[in-house]
Length: 144
Image 1 (cartoon, one colour):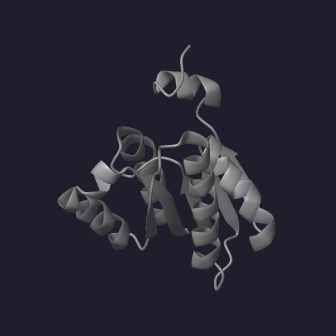
Image 2 (tube, one colour):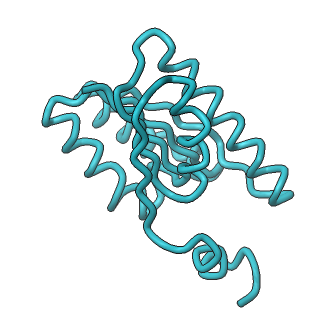
């Protein structure tokens, strides 16, 4: 099975480390052909050794990793750019070998998955952890 896994977290972030990477690695160990698209913060992308460690761990399992840069400000245009960039890079990455399933995690990942699943003629699994407005308040993006 070919899986395109899209998440609006970074691989080096705590949620990427605790929720995304273990799931992706387990799926790969079970035989899935995976492409992982993450949105990594500039500070995390600058952690050369950590990013290399993550890449080596994914490479070892045959996971293709596309770490995209996360944009924060201005909020709406930055997120819109990330959605467009994530959708475009995902489509380009999987044009030759269409994924059977797009596993979209997080609200923004779900938006990307909804946009590209019909284009790639893939099934979509949307996996959300919480309610997006609550996540924004918890992250300090907006007031409660």
